[in-house]
Image 1: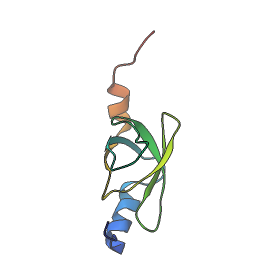
Image 2: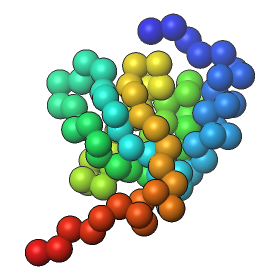
Image 3: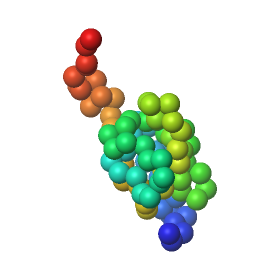
Image 4: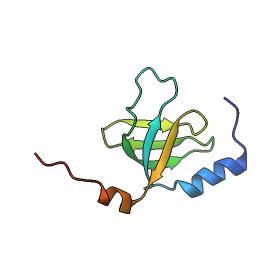
Length: 86
């Protein structure tokens, strides 16, 4: 994995501030992957560009933007999703 430039890291810090909601599309080669489609909240972006997230399934994980695939979700998108009833 190559090192991110300072500009790339600053981009991720601005695009994904703490509290940003994301959805994981695919993880790299993790032995215990978080399932695709799992949603979470960004806690912090560190100085090497890792997005530290707390996922709705209770797991916490550092997402590497150059290895893992994810996208930002808006509150509007989440509120439009159908609610499951029991």
